Image 1 (cartoon, helix red, strand yellow):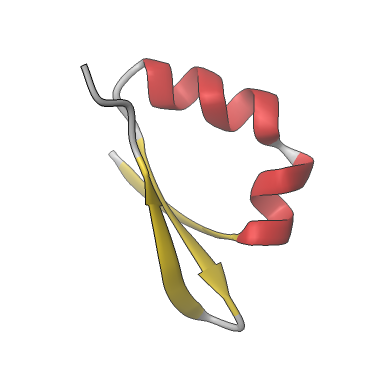
Image 2 (cartoon, rainbow, N blue to C red; image 1 turned 30 degrees about the horizontal axis):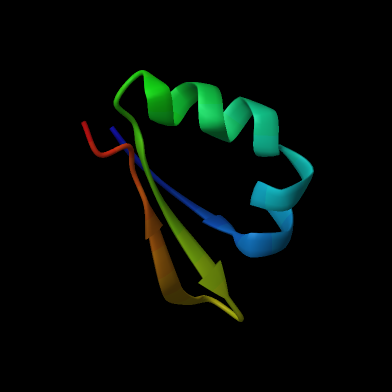
Length: 43
């Protein structure tokens, strides 16, 4: 599953985001509403 969240929100929930990434989830991080980073675990 792919989630979209702001960088500041990801920073506040960093542990949870990492645990979900380990389970295969992907995160699109945004700044001012524009995507700037894709976070996913590379296995």
